[in-house]
Length: 206
Image (tube, rainbow, N blue to C red; front, side):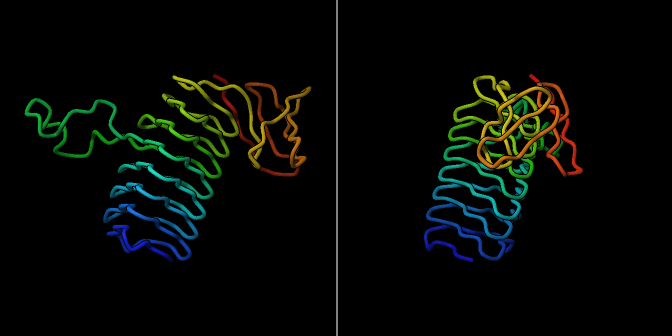
């Protein structure tokens, strides 16, 4: 494990082989797995869970209620949120809402997904396995596994392989031109399955 001298890491829950770089701040109660890379100027709040082999590039903000599963890539400047109806807890008209934690909307980014630079993830969403969120996207609803979304609000524009290459959709199947993986039922709204794998991923079109 390596923690840069200017980083402020207040949690003991940092996995073996993880690196935390300059001016990052990790609060008590956060958990970061093994072999992760946390870039400069990242803020990771109490309650955040980061799995193994995750890359978090510079300037990202991860708030309470965010769970990042294994192998996820989070590009520079990505912002997560956790409150659907935010007010200052110091505002007398809203203070009662923040006495407990009912306001917290949890977000999960599933295994292998990638989030491009500058994306904003609204609260209470799920980003599916190996999905790809384009740079600058504003994600307002759940993202299906293996799908590519872009824009504001983010909308599905295609499918992506586990290796990160956009899939070429042909008759009843999807093919990766980079690694050669084939997926059955590649048409939008179908069920896509990696050949010789048991796991079936139901992809929901936009």
